[in-house]
Image 1 (cartoon, rainbow, N blue to C red):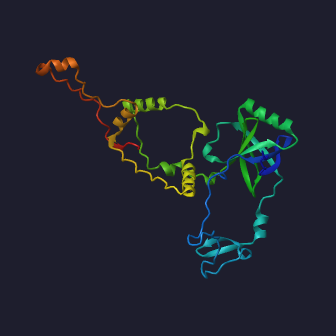
Image 2 (tube, rainbow, N blue to C red):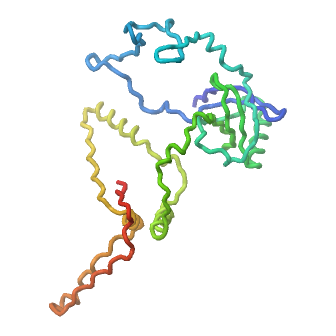
Image 3 (tube, one colour):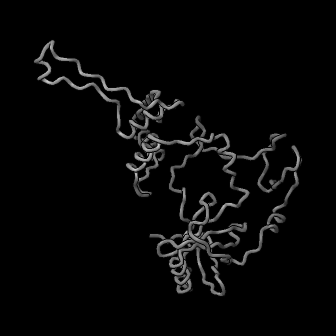
Length: 298
């Protein structure tokens, strides 16, 4: 098995203790099915070309330059050496600024995870840091220059090593108030809340990433296989629309409490002939349907 290639190498420093470490990608999309864009007529791959938006002429790579728009159609041009000079200097050191409780950071700030492992020497110091954090039940906030930018990194014990997650900056995280401002102030009580709690209780489980299927990848792989073998790919049937239902009734059905049905006729009742009394209809439910109507999720 080929050893993974480090994305970054440097040092991690806490207090006056430092040890060499390496970052390895923890999550990657490289295994996903990828497509090439082809010319339908020839079957040849097409290539991307940059053209001048006004003249339509192709622009070669050495003639391309970065620009920052200050007004509509007006740009400040930045030469490659000027951009390079703006990149912060890096001494390849992850400096730990503070140790914080593991649950103190909102995971909305999480960006990308990396495995953090000792690099050749300094294993003792690395293990000391890992085990000390485990015992204290803390995570570490550190900073360094990663991939040309100063990044804040959250470091946590993970198995035999550490996991380092780059964090989004505060200006990159959108306010939740904007997303939820149209949400009315409602308070659900009584039977509906009890039924919701019951349904949640019956669905309790544990997280196991291996049980999650990428249905799109599997479907595309099957489509490619069918095309290679000359088979027709079956078309999906349109899902049936859900029937309108009030929220309370949808909760009851989800909890396994369906509508009451009329009692079945027994053999004894049949023998009584016309003298048999009709079965009494179930009493009407005292609980009124919820005022707002909704559609059950399909």
